[in-house]
Length: 354
Image (cartoon, rainbow, N blue to C red; front, side):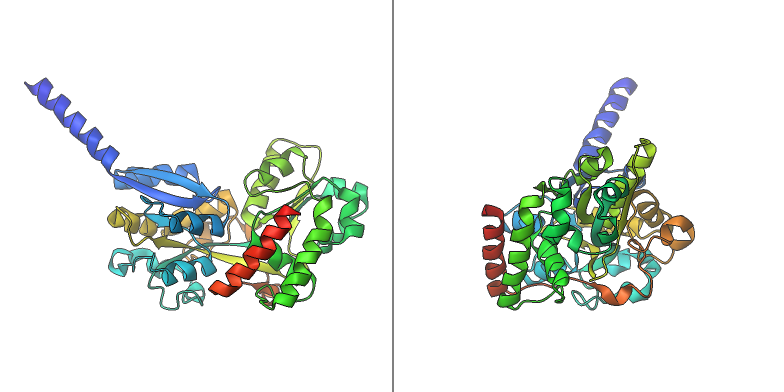
């Protein structure tokens, strides 16, 4: 009888664990495996992750009726969209004792001024990663600090077929706008058209629009330049060093300006496990857990309790922790209204089809 009771107890425990699942819809490469396992141990639950490569992809999937996700990690303008669509759940801050660890300077963003729905998680810059060795041979290494490296036909033609760009209408259009000297959040249709033409003239020299595998393409040397997120490019650099590749990878801000993405933890309104979602947020607000995100993933960190545990060499990388001199040229993308979205979608469709 005791053995039977023990077996039943183990079975019940197993079933409870299976039921206690937190579903996180996250960016790829934005949570370490070690951190995920520690969270599972702390909450006696299972963390199930699904991944997206672009805010628009995540928003479109949710708008199409995707269910079962508890937490998403949207950039500022996408937080605006979720709030506007009434897709975000108000946070119960009484369950977030570690919220005090966030640097006050990162609270109260334009997208959620009272942080009613969102908690700052990490920030990245959208920059160019590049193979210094190959660019030196091609005679264009001096252009690595400019968007001209991917947009100027006279420059990019020298590395034809070795360039990838993000498959993201907002990020790519923003880069083209900044290359032209306009703000990243410019919405004048005439200036959008100019940016579209810049992209179309450069597109024949690119290898691909790539959100998913550009880390690997850079690491193995197939791509020499990639428009990407600073944490991904940090990972590519570290992977190349570990593999002892016969070339040097680097990544840096561009002189015309860059976008900065403040990514946030948001609990969805229809989340099945809001209780576990709050536990996960509070867990990630712990200083040591937050520091691991920077040390292993290369993301900038809004958590002041994390900074004593962050590797000093990472804090010196301006694309991850921008200097005071660089900050004025960094811009956060803001949400668009319906008319603007339709216009941008039209321009984007033309870019992809031509």
